[in-house]
Image 1 (cartoon, chains in turn green, purple):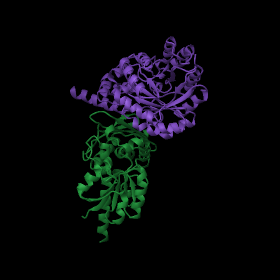
Image 2: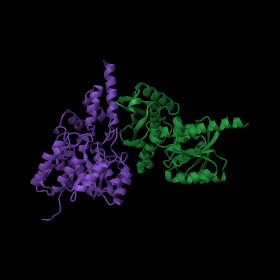
Image 3: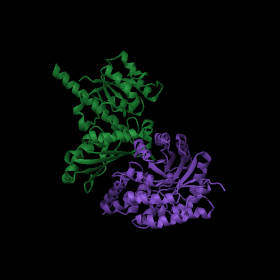
Image 4: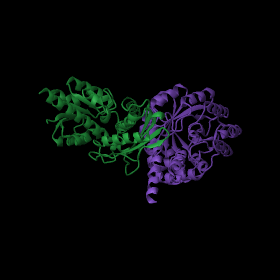
Length: 296
Length: 340
């Protein structure tokens, strides 16, 4: 199978972690890395990988429109507006890891199939990628009237972008819980914990389900099945305990250990975002490969 | 004699006390307390869910009454006192702050863990733009060395905080530590310095006086200690003590005694005292609002609440991590089961 050609915009923590993950992918080939500071650690790393490196962002691609089929945007919500415009002009599919959320929200285990043709998809937030699958798993067996998630990450793994715009996390994640998770109402909370050594990413999902549909066994099974699915592309994703029930309130406790690719293992929040993005791109690649077979 | 006050008090029972009554305030209670405090000439009255704007949640406890209704009610009866709101970035949002400002809240107290001040920049700046008086609230101050506290306080001042508070959320600081921290803050900041204490180790009053002696001019208290854990510095007592010391607060001592006795005491489910659990919080250095949650988890999982709290302290859990109480309780219960 020929690999799908991909590029990365942004060479901070997320972009750099994507570089590591993409170099391991069987269906994706990293062809270009676009940043702004040629001296940055991420740009130097890209050069060492031997891929095309552009220091004028996505505009660098304009002379090489066929170089990539998909780009990962790991910049900021603000920069994404321009990046997306440029990508659409060149007919490049956009995977948005910023909070810009122009395209539909996507969670690989929940709604990837519906969005394989979308020109721009958004990965929501790290907390969303960790918890929305669980909300959806509960929703599959009982109506979720309300779901609330609490993401606790180590201070060291919260980058300056997250810190300067922390409301974007809570607001975007809450929307994702409703639109993709299927809860009637969603809420998100994020907490930074500075303990040393840094703590692993923790996420808690609290859900209020319709009392008449409460089936503890079915919910527990559905949640466990979903955790296994997420684990298939985020190996460090696991349930801390079985779901805990208190009346019609279900609480699910998650811990996400990062793969330790670019940042140490505590940065599960980074890992789940980049893993989800790579998973989405791989599915896009599979879809394209299947289509090519059909057409020939 | 000048009319300037030496110390400006903020009454926090209608916010911090929300923890002690599982966030069950009614419009009537808030109206009655605020009206009386306004008559006693308390400069600031804080009204919000215990965890600040947007705090109503399964994680912390759902509010009985929408906090915006409580804020609105407080504003409507306070022609002297200014209504303050608490906001923890990560829980509440700028949107919530704007709603509170629209209802007439005049002071925004933006709270972060003592090492995470930079998440408060947007919120402090927005509060300023909304014309509110701004406070940076550095929680769990006992967890960071003095230099770190000063560094973070300077950040908040640079974002536009009119006052920066050292907040002893766990009631874990001792008077000599408060003295050292306040002194360092006074030296480094040009804005006001404030102190918010909890009485878990029975030193809230001593800590408050130490802070005042070192130059803190903004002080929090709760009537009848109606606050999280063992409550805060007891406001009506503080007013009397400061008057004896010749320190001017502008607040009427007799009226405060009456409000505490007649209006606030009946709100408390039981009189505030330093019991085994609140003492453990101060001793372990754990966020005071964990008290009732740890009690409930102790019953549900059959483990000693002290073991839960000590373990939380050992893991350096910060404010807002109430989910860890259940997590730790379940883990301890599992261990006990395995051992037997």
